Amino acid sequence: MNLTSYYITFHDPIWVMLLTTALFFPVRQLIWVLYVRKKQKSQQTVSEEERKVLKKRATFTSILLCIVFSYIYVNQVFN
Image (cartoon, rainbow, N blue to C red; front, side, top):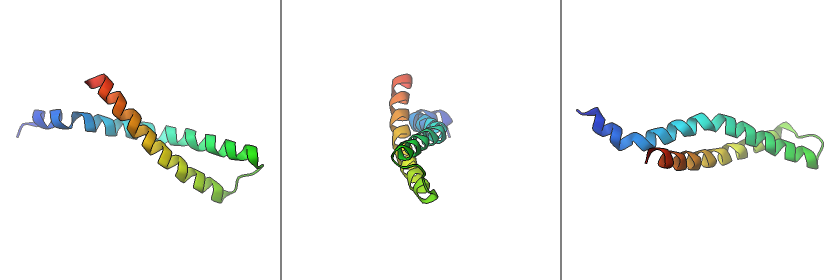
């Protein structure tokens, strides 16, 4: 069993997943804060229900954004 062949095969996906995981939480928090602030401009208070909906929306957006950014970054740096 040669681990070098496995590493070469899965090198890019491993780095993409590591970078995606590292970026996910700060990016989600940033996007969520921006969503809440935008909502507060149109209305004075944001209810907890609205915050939960905005958090789900920020989660989906940050997953997509982090995967795309990580894939592009790994391709530029390692290839």
